Image (cartoon, rainbow over all chains, first blue to last red; front, top):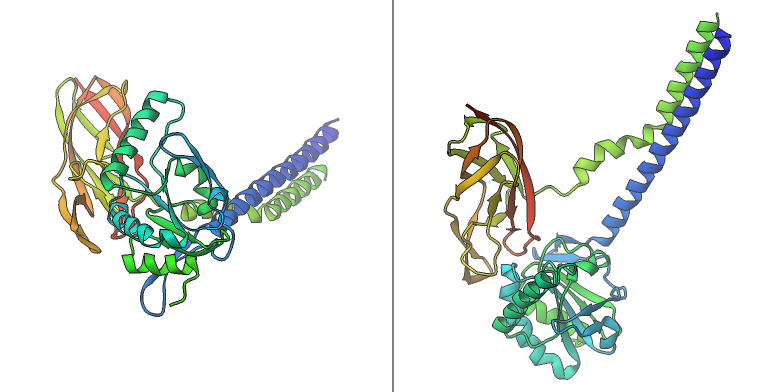
Length: 210
Length: 168
């Protein structure tokens, strides 16, 4: 009797050990897969041969992830609405000082290249609380004040956080993706660069060879 | 004899379980290393003893990661997010006021016209606490928004756990 009890205990122990190790292994694989996914989607800043920093995105050479977002008036804009135009998808926020510096450059360049089929889509990463209509209204007004102050003439979309994952997490702002007329990402930049650098990328998106 | 067999079976099971779970080590070892480090960390104090019911000033030390800055409490532009310190309601400790350190002027290297007021390195807030008698584990919060010379990270709130003892 005593022997049977001991054997049953040992068998149960072994089964428990197997179950536990199986669960731990599954958990490990899940986390490893998540890490891999995250690292695959995130871009990185690298320094090129000339010493300038370049933003390398895994989206380079691939179609930009599709999205549909609202502007400040509630009108929906989909990426597909801009098919056939070269685009700069500019992620920014009202609290981002470098974004404030590059906005006038984007306005100028958009005006300069609009006739050639270029457009800027500015996507605000400011927090949006959709559950609280009053707060949402205040948040929209804050963004609208900024848009008016900066005299942004191109479409300004909100709730950028909702599409941040396919665009690499957007850990830092400003981040801009340049798309050619077929919606393919031809260049990207993270952080404040220069007006010349932005223009170079716009020309690349438009297929203008110097 | 039976006992010896049982011990062997258990030892084999333990060895097997150990071998099977070798792969899970990164689950515990890697996670903290791969997680994004916060731009700001609370350094000290972890515990303070203050007279109960009497406003007492406490120096709270924080450290900002090298290469980054955060907006000061008065960042100079209305859209920028100021650094703010708060205590949760109902924690047994009330925040009677905070004296934030003055920030340093910072000019964006790529735009000399943009002048900001920021904290870098280590900074100290002087918070006035009023504690009820007893031991209170307070989860204070610091909200900040960090940037480097060219880019900004989203605003973040970190917790500073402080054991506040209110003595009669």
